[in-house]
Length: 127
Image (cartoon, rainbow, N blue to C red; front, side, top):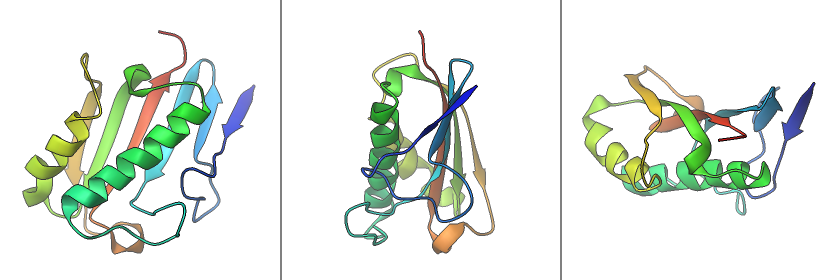
């Protein structure tokens, strides 16, 4: 059995998918980009601001599922430019207190809406 997680505090999906799906005690969060859920506008002022918005969107979905960043076990970060790695890494790291999740970061040729960063996560509902 699966449960669809959806919140107005994160952007609506821009395709045939859900913000997150809870199944078997695991929460699978779809990739998030820097769309402000209130305005619907992209936050592209800087790579740091963009990454913060992505993490805020993820946090809203985690909260809707009754979870937090402490429950995250796996992260995937997709960057348009690996030269932004250090800046993204600094912002990303600020959202975790300890016991960081497993992660990969890869450079890609293009992301939805031509953003610079997209992040997806997997969380465990019972830790």
